[in-house]
Image (cartoon, rainbow, N blue to C red; front, side):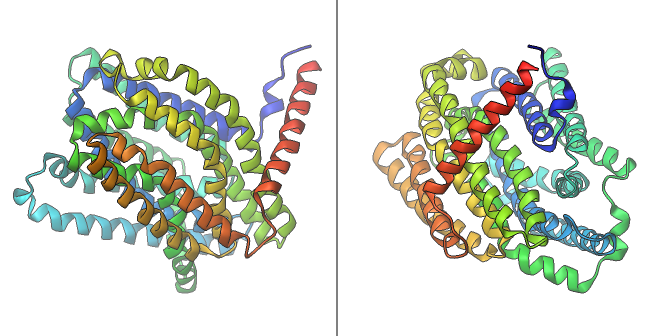
Length: 445
């Protein structure tokens, strides 16, 4: 038996997974440092800002990521240039529009009494603009399935940030202000590198067409639902906790959220590769392969999550201690992590329901799905806080929100293709065994 060579794994799935593992590793290390060098209040303020920025980015990315992949993947060079030029046009318009909205708040910043909101308003515009080139490049590379370039760009972005934070911590300069500044500068650096290397394809801006802009807009105005649904729970609960329980409680709540990277890493990888595969299949009228991917990917992930969930249940207290440090021992973080991990077994089906609906031009359903999830989350969170008067009042909204979105998406997806929970589990089981068999065969060579 010999170890497999790199060539055995040089494929899009492996590169996507490696990219997410490396970047999430940087993210976890960054958070671990921040939990130790910042106060609970400051770390809560940071999470609130990241959440606001993440919501805005979810709107921009949700509007254009899937549309870029859907209309650009596998198309001709001429049409591809028209699509990318139109994507650039819409990305700039969306960025300017959201900055303008924030600018209206900035005019009245003196009247804002909440410190978390003040920080968000002051730093939003410049930070959001700094990530524009990087974001568009990321969508293009997903469509091209060039995960090696994605990996390098993400290494530049996350790697430079972790290095800067370590230096700040060593110099005892790790303040909230410096953290916000480092985040801005690393975004600028990554966008500049993407621009210099020609990955942005900004020259296609002149190839934009009104009909392509309309086509993407008609698709994107609803497709943002998929991305929003992935960010919905944490974002809404962040606002509820910040305004009703305070930033210190938000720090405790976000710790198990960060630990959820253990399942988000493979989930993001599979969603990225699966979405481009389904888009290519749809554009080539290969509905059989589209349906196969929509069942295989979530099924395999569900089986892969089982041992991870068991390990998380047993090691939750250790994981919380390693990430957050001693001051978070004995808090609700460990048990909330256990609850979130229990729910994660259904994440793959929910996420792929949304992606498949988008590819099938049913993006309006995903928009309605977001509304359903909001309708489930908010009442449960507010009622929970009213009853428990602590973080658990918000945490119990997680399963209610997940089930609402899952069942709504599943019900509507079945209207457009043969699809069932039973088929997902069966396909996932068969494909998981095949993956194990092939891996074992490679190890034996």
